[in-house]
Length: 128
Image (cartoon, rainbow, N blue to C red):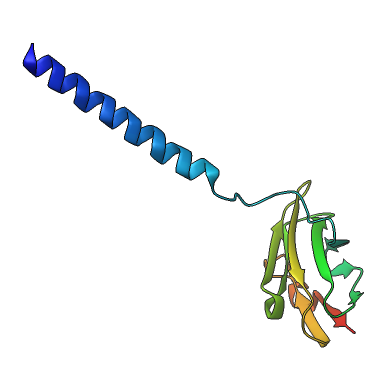
């Protein structure tokens, strides 16, 4: 009987610890798929072999939500200066949010090989 009591106490303690740990993992802030309300959404469509629009103009300090879609084969869109590297395939979209915190003109390009004209897939992000 004494061994049964110790085992029950041990199991109860283990259950409390597991419950406490589970609570800690769900109380932390989780990443949100919902765009922040102050982000301006800019949609870019990739196709063989270009982007529409090919020039994007934003204001310094503006929060941008960039959404990439494709008309044909898988494409990417990378802007290294802002940590953006999107990838999408037909019927799918990808998005990223960033703050345009640097003024200037920044090239963006297709980051997924997509055919013979892949190297021509470039555009410009203008931050005023």
